[in-house]
Structure formats: structure tokens, C-alpha cells
Image 1 (cartoon, rainbow, N blue to C red):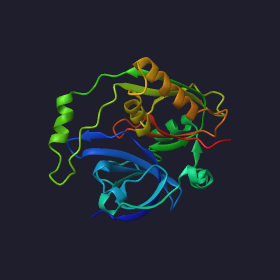
Image 2 (cartoon, rainbow, N blue to C red):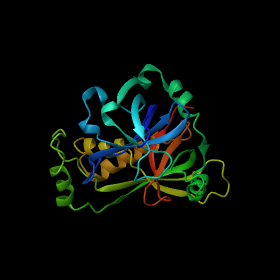
Image 3 (spheres, helix red, strand yellow):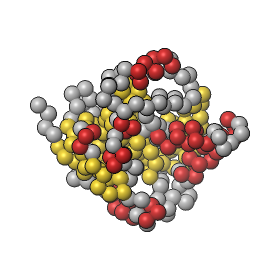
Length: 260
């Protein structure tokens, strides 16, 4: 029997939703455990099935019952009891809370991406989440082949009778990437990581009605995500995380970007 812990977490990452036959539609979330200032991963979170008062924004502080999963040995991973999710507070920047966010986030050890890869390969550390500081950030995209639509729709068709009915969420036909070097690491070879933040997928969906061509849409997304990661104007950090099956395949889960 797994020991259940009640954790208080500042949610810093929400990935774009994905359907699976095992869990239905889920979102991978991550954040800072306020008990020890370490990054933790919460999965699976059936976000669109949550009650309205449980639907947390990024930079919400939540309380949740969780436990180490049987099928994921990454030390930062926790399975959640979604019924236990309670939103305690929201650190909204419109209320001048960047400093409150910084007071929590910057207690997490900051590494280089080069060090993250070394720690991921170290069996004693087995690192799967990190907070890293980039420099020389550029952006690119590539067209991706969409998953088999019938298979995707079947995941929604077989959802539990108790799940709330919802339309299948659209798969985005592009991959987006940040290219960067590690700040302060002279021999850094450079890194290219895909961006899987919910916000970039949602921007693609929302902005199509605003911009007349796909080319303009992609240019606007590039402008926005380069502005987010503008290290000349902002104190930029990337939240990075790996795949369960491929421990050295990391992605940018989100960006922390208070002004300098």
C-alpha cells in the first residue's frame, strides 16, 4: 500500500492535454513542493473533468493527496487523487505577485542544461525535472505528422461513464522548439528542446481566427515566445522535464520570466 502524502504545491507547468486509452484525457503538471522547495511532477491530472473550483491556473498554490506511482520510477513523479485537489491561492501577476513567485521558484536549485543531462544519466540522481538558465535563445518550428485520428477519437469514445462529456481536443500540427546555450557555461555545445506548454498550443488554436495565413500565425507565435524568453529584458529560466521511457529526452515545460 502506497503512503499517501498531502502536498502543497505551487503549480508552474501545465502541458498540452493528451488522450490515452489508459487514463482518458490527461494533463501533466509540475511545480514546486512548498515543503522542500523541490520540483515535482503530478500525473495524470484529468484537468477538464475537474470541478470548476478545482481547475487551477498556473502559479496557483494547490493542496493535493498524492503518492509515488508503481509505473513511473522517476523520483519527482507523483500520482494524484484528483478528488482531493484544492486551490489555496493564486499568485497572479496583475496583483503584483512576481516577487512572491520568485521567493518560491528561485529556492529550487538552478542548473545548466548540460548538468541536467549529466544528472539524468547518473543512476543515483536519476534527475527528470530541472530549472535551468538559458542564453542566446532562438525559436523554430517544424511540421509534424498527426496521430491516427481514429485512434485518437477512440480514446475519447471509451472514456469512463463518470467522466464529463467533452469534445476531443485538437492536436497541433506543428512542433515548436527553443534553441539555446547554458548561461555561464563556456563549453556548452548548445541545446534544442521542444516546447510542450499548454499555452503555446492554445495560442495556435486561438490566434488562427486573428491572422489571415498560417505563415503570419507562426511568425506571431515566434515573436511572442521569443519575447517571453528575452534574456536582455527578463530574468529567464526554463522548466525542463524528460520522458518516462527516454530519460535523456528533455522538453521545455514552461518559462519563468520575471523582469530584470
